[in-house]
Image (tube, rainbow, N blue to C red; front, side, top):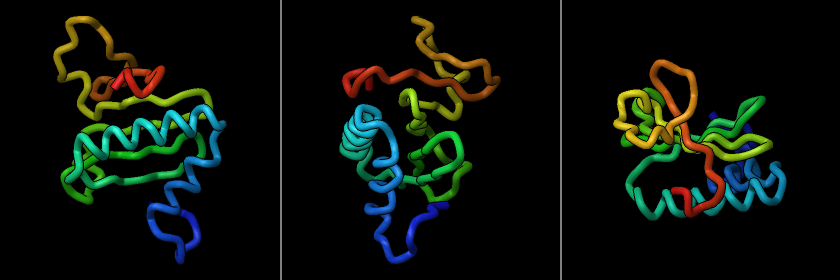
Length: 113
């Protein structure tokens, strides 16, 4: 799941992954993560650092299949991704993406949350 030094704490590993991004993207990611941790204190964070994005999923369990939403951090921005976004009511058509299941909102700032 996480690929940093095994002696590092999970918090330090996540901080290292976030620090790889441009300072503005890293700041937005830290701010959004802070808001989500406060709003959903019992959620389990599942973190994946892959070749094109850092994904921080929020789940009631440690199973990736139970992730409800995630922060998807890219070099050019941060998205709030809903695993089952297409099943959500979206009267203002805020949800983006072409998937049949998932959808996302681009986060311009922490206040977008």
